[in-house]
Image 1 (tube, rainbow, N blue to C red):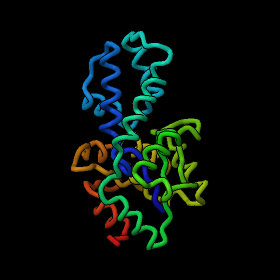
Image 2 (cartoon, one colour):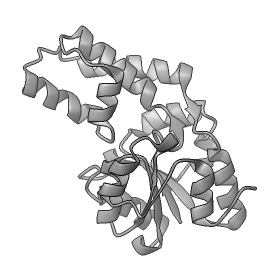
Image 3 (cartoon, rainbow, N blue to C red):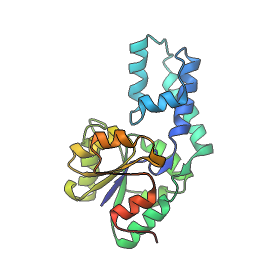
Length: 216
């Protein structure tokens, strides 16, 4: 049984979202590059990051700033989202082997409907989509992964999570699950290892091999 994170694991969205976020923060008087935003906020939730940043740095953000960010972010995601290379081959392998899978993300269901829809992956997860909005505490707390596993009828110790952030790795480990740390092209591998990833890989072919499904 496999639980996938969404952004950066199923869909290639991190660069898009962090670009928009950095642009809007810079326009609002907090200069930051997309790479800095990625490094600092990866695995977090924008709805909690923005208020914390505003309070910490005294930013005078309009009441509708977050709404405008999401509007701009969604527009960019609708134009640019692509599936992570070879993710469909992994999903084909899981289906062929009769191994269940779902997605559990910090993102809202509305956002996943956009990103997974544009990437032509929504139909593969429809009915098995879990958001941090569904539980009291988001990652790095274990609530989301435990909720997903319970809903799917899986025991935590039987689940493997595929995550690309240290926040998600910590949540999965706290839930008593094994974790594949997905460090695409090697980026962030040490952080995933330090967070407790059971195994760290740099490509989806290695994810498939670790799970034991190979390519179809």
